[in-house]
Image 1: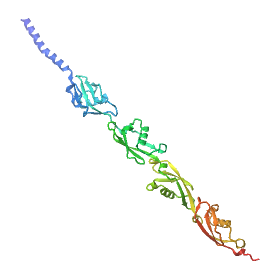
Image 2: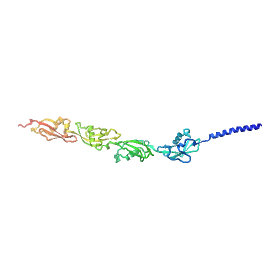
Image 3: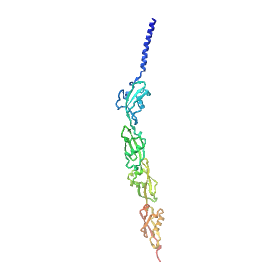
Length: 349
């Protein structure tokens, strides 16, 4: 009887233990990946979905996304997954294989790769500096700007960009292939002021008796000979003025750079320098007309700033003479001076 009770007791214990062991084994079995939110990444067990996936990876020029990009996206869709347990292999331009430690099986996820790069990431240098077409010939056109953009931004594919809205100092650059570049960027440059001013020889400028033209006189002459400057002449500055030349530059150097020397002739009208035209009385021999030198000396005495080496005395009579310029680079015009001859030299012998 005791043996029978002992046997029944063992059977009872075994009956309660076995289910417990089975339950423990079932709990430790790996979960299937289908329990995760991977369908939102367009996952298929055996075949790839359409490449037109709603999941787009920006790769900034790379053909495939990085492993980390894919892991981050899976983590975003499945917050409960430890990102360090995600394994990504066989990455292509539109799919990858995913396994996760603790989960059974593997999944193929499909996506779209956007390789385009914002154009301002590729074009780092946005000011091209001074562009002088003298050495290139031609004009300020699209090809010229593409050449300089490539020089300063070696990674740029100039076959994939458009150059538009060309002005004196700016252009716009955008993409002609949005699979490569996106966005638009403004580029600045400057042109040499010497290419903007066509006529450097201003000719004669009538000045006052200080022998130097004013800044406004020079600007007025520039406008006259370069009509393109009419509306912007006040954006230029004139410096280092002499009687023969001056330097011209544009105030906004980022638009027109450098400077140019312009030449002119500073002329003084004789009526501006000879202000005393009544020379008084001359004593001559036998009531003869005064000599040219007498008239010049008297003019110099009465008009100290006059350079008598630059004048001629003509049509001399006993009451007047005409003064003209002997150097039109100095004086222009003519003027009449009057005087009298003293009777003291009357011949009464």
